[in-house]
Length: 75
Image (cartoon, rainbow, N blue to C red; front, side, top):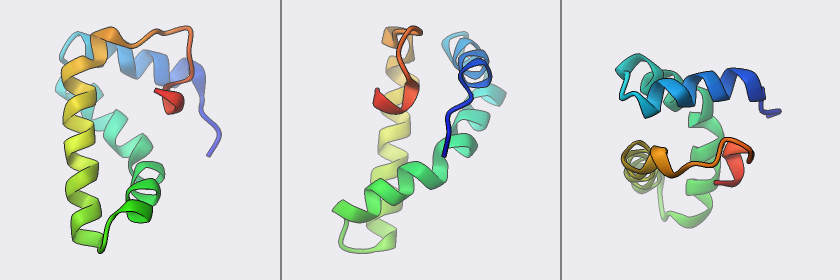
């Protein structure tokens, strides 16, 4: 999946402002990619989903620390 930088930055700005809609957009935009990574480390899909959701909570809690000059996927 190629990251659309402008779109992602717009979504992240909304997340930094605690907009629920932006958080939902970010989740939907990166769900498949993040789940594919979580499935590599989890024993089953349920555990992978739990890891994924924990990860997104950490993202939403710490999104203000994200450096907008970097690619989001690398963070």
